[in-house]
Length: 114
Length: 111
Image (cartoon, rainbow over all chains, first blue to last red):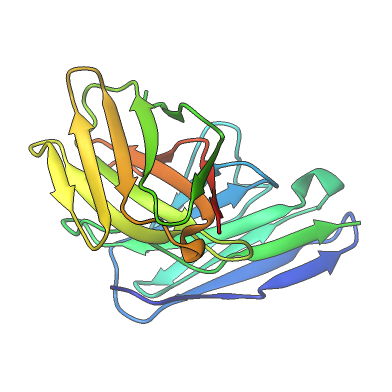
């Protein structure tokens, strides 16, 4: 199993600013994903972070708002840009490799925008 | 596309009883399912998975049943303990597509 570390674990940010969340995996993985989980709700996929190419975004999520980097097979960042209170949520990184049966999650980043 | 949903948002059980959490999915092409447990303030934790070529899979105190005919799966927890209190999510995928999560069921264990 992979161990996934996210930083920061929580933050309180002013509206209009941006926050970059880091995700570090302790082993090389093929697939990395970013999810959003709003309070009391399920997880919604934001995008697939592709190593060496642009991320693949799900419907309703755009690169300008959620730019993603993945410079190698163990690290990815998600930026929440020009934040508003509606962006207050938990952001989760997950990772796995093609052919494996498990997708592991970090502990999440709890973001509050004021 | 894939859609995964749960029948009940909350479930309360007595300590020591068995728990059954249900999940329905819509995409008949889904071939892989995972159950996750999420405790407050933590990320989802893998519990057990099952592929579509299986009907049943057992782990430690947990069993997942898959009924492809009616596109339904369930998680059974034997001898439920207070530490089992959490939100449980089912998630499914087809091929190499990302997991799609259900709405979640909050399990409360009554001591």
